[in-house]
Amino acid sequence: MNTSSRHGLGEAEDILAQQLKLGKTWRIASSGFEPLSRPLTRDAVEGDEVEVIAFCEIKSAKKMERELERAKCPVCAGSMRRFGTRATRSWLHLPIFGKRTEIRAELPRLRCNNRLCDKTVSVNPPWESSSKHFSLSVEEALIREVAGGGLSHASRMLGIPESTLHKLLNRRIDRLVEEADWRAVTAIGVDDYAIDKGQSYISIFSDIARRRVLFVVRGRTHAAVKAFLAEGEKRGLVKDKVAYVSMDMGKGYIKGMNESFPLARKIFDKFHVIKLANDKVDQIRRAECTKAELSVRATLNGKRWIFLKNQENLTEKELNAFKNIDMSTFWTGRAYQVRCALQQVYAFGDAPTALHRLRCLIKWIRRLCKKAPSYFSRPMNTLANTLEEHAQGIVAHWDNKLTNAFHEGLHSVFSAIKRRSRGLGFTGMRAHLFLHFGRLPFGFDLKQPFQVAPMPTWTPRPQSPPSNQTHTPENQEPKAVS
Image (cartoon, rainbow, N blue to C red; front, side, top):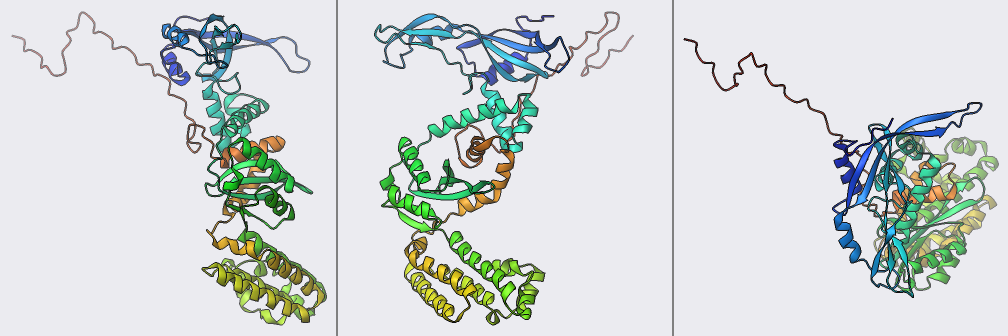
């Protein structure tokens, strides 16, 4: 069965020409349907299965010859001459009429006229994707479907294995990341994310002014910062132009930023400062639940989130319980007051006032620790020492109000990204991060679902009236018979 013909796909050829962006330099030579025989892969079954596929054969038009005459060598920029035709290649395209569709073409070849260069190249077709085996329409459909429903959903829709689509997605993203320009980056944010059980982390570097992911690397030490700087120098990043770096108070990041970006102002993010105080409050609450009197234990048991949330975020039940607690009668309540006082430091409008209040808070913590039990004094002394050591970095928040809010928003969806990239490892997770948060120039809006061009509808021809009947137009009255 071979129904190939000059117009085997009918009016669908016009839609194909638009999807493939043929222009005036390429033309559709033939199209149609043909059987494709493949061996069965099922166990204990012998034989071949036959699948009917659609194909479209493309050849160069007359205008292509004029374009080739003006071609320049990519190596020496010299003139080139026609040098035969490459063997027929095929590209997988979107299904037509529910059939697997292949694009077939013979690509013209060119050779440099300079004998010292003698470079030979093939013409790049406008429909070819970054993987060389699929059309751009397949790549666009893949990216849209992965962004909306995940890789398995895209695999079911396109009928292509997930492993193949994963490679195609990585190639497209790698190419766009390599073409990215970092020359305008002046404010950097970095944060660590747990990707597996145990001490398995990745570091995500971003441009917090433009809210886009720049670089993803394994680990959260100073080596990750050095790897980011090495990658940035390839993309045009000038380290002396980086004015601000927002991060947590991890020793690895601090060491790496001091070595790689010595002129940048180090900003310790507000979220991580408050989180550090919250961790100390919860540590004191757990210790007091086991060492305090029974009346205090009854107050603390089951009240964890009352001491970790802000008052305006409490539920109605938690708020009623909060109003009945006297925070000054036990050490967890005083630790909670310290956390609230630290949060109030960020309410001041200028850096000098905030720095003065922060130093007063540190003195108050140390006065409390003198009369407190060890389960309170140890974590609170650690908090006071950390605040004092990094006071300038905390106050740097008031320079331009830069925060790691972009990273904290990314934290909220990171678990969904890990689920979508399960089984694909670090490369799959990196691809999904750039797909959703890299702001890469794909050339189309990811939020819009992929729409296949509508197929032409068949309309029946109007039938001519029988010869033995008189046809009367609608707007003409019948003549009277005398």
